[in-house]
Length: 306
Ligand code: ACO
Image (cartoon, rainbow, N blue to C red; front, top):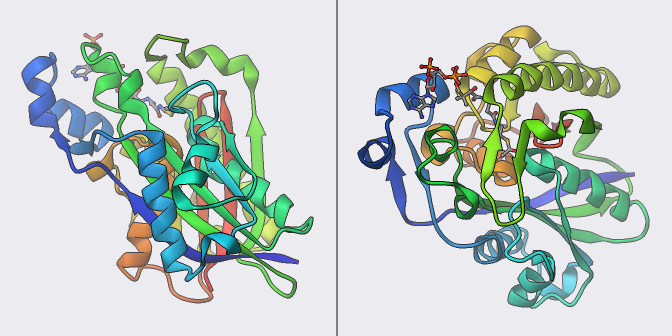
């Protein structure tokens, strides 16, 4: 039994905010941000609903499917437009879907958690599922806090997954959560994102490496077999540290955080789409998708591109 990726789509706001622009209102600099994070600019604007609907529409067009072809919408977001209703039913309405629709919140691991959820739904009778990761992080940023303002941004990415009784594009998963680390990265009701950056960094490298190794083992392949690593885009130094420990050269990692910053559950589909557009993954090749985020949560998967 299996899961096939049938189409992809992304959406980012038009408004580009450069490090230079942030340096005008914050005690920071392009050099500090670029050196410590790898980020040079980010996109700001829209909402989880508008960005999610646009990415979802593009993924459906790419997959050549109609609204009536979609059996379920799973939308990953840590920044829903409202506490209630969930963002997914509103996005479903925008897309002309009449199927069930729900949000998943696993912070920056959200897109991978949504894929895992969709896999279960496909294996229990649904034919086609739209998975979207959409974030409006800028709404929950204190723009006078240089710790967070330089990192977080807005965007969305989506894929259409289809059931295939004969083969699968997703070979393995390794997901996890550790609520004892919940206070390391938080956003209270009506508040702003706050983070113990150093501790998140330390733990992020560890959970990415551990979960990637388990996902490789379950898939029965080694790190040498991977053509690409598609990591959550939080900090270039986290990606460098994790790939180095896995014995993977940086050339095999997809990096889009220089252009998009940290877009939480949108970052893995934004990176995957970039790799696809640039012909970096070919049929039959293996890729590791891996993310971590507030919770703490983490998720790695081995996929084979068809
Ligand atoms: N500009 C200039 N200086 C700054 C800035 C800034 N934007 N931010 C912090 N500094 C200063 C600090 O005050 C500190 O100054 P001091 O030495 O005088 O005390 C100095 O720079 C070093 O600060 P550190 O916090 O030690 O910097 P570090 O190298 O750890 O980088 C960072 C900070 C980028 C936040 C890093 O720790 C990190 O990336 N952590 C992980 C973040 C992450 O992955 N988050 C996941 C989010 S996922 C989600 O769910 C949304």
